[in-house]
Amino acid sequence: MPATDDLPWDLCFPMTAVGGFLVFWFLISPRWKAFARAYPVAHRPPGKSYKVPGVRFGDTMASYKNAARVVFAEEGLYLHMQFLCRPFHPPFLLPWECVRRVEELKGLFRRRYYHVVVEGAGEAGSMELWLPGKVEVEQELCSTFRQAVYVGGMNAGAGVPPILGTEGLAVGRRKGLKGDGAY
Image 1: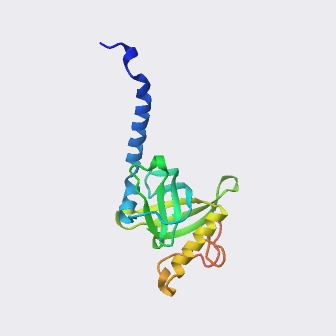
Image 2: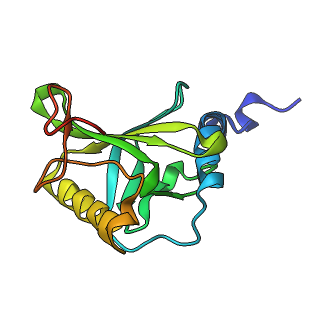
Image 3: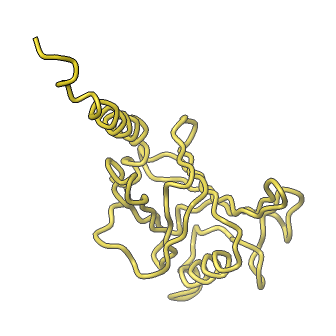
């Protein structure tokens, strides 16, 4: 029988931690994978990648805090995970038509967020994103959304809801709505 000094106890904790990390990501990944199957993407679109403070899928407990990233593209919202969280989480591109509502929210200490409600096709279900309320995020979200709506004429944005309230776009806010509030 080997002596206890010969056993690699110093490797047990790191291997258990890595294994537990992978099992955890595997268990919460089915909804992310459903969106990835419904909206596959071959390559990352050009643009700056922003950290997403929160992502939640439907009525499940699966939520991601500061693990996902978003790129605003002409085609839609490209979502991918940060490097360490990528196992079992392929990237996907949500078309703008899936965005149902965008609201500006005030969080703790007057911190601003943009709450984006998405309705996916088929088994993908619904998803909520909380984007940081930084000025550059707002500008990029507004400009890429406008391009998606207005490229190709009047019917290009059919089915796409109004978004964010800068320069003529309708705004959804928690306390009162600007405009007619239909979104």
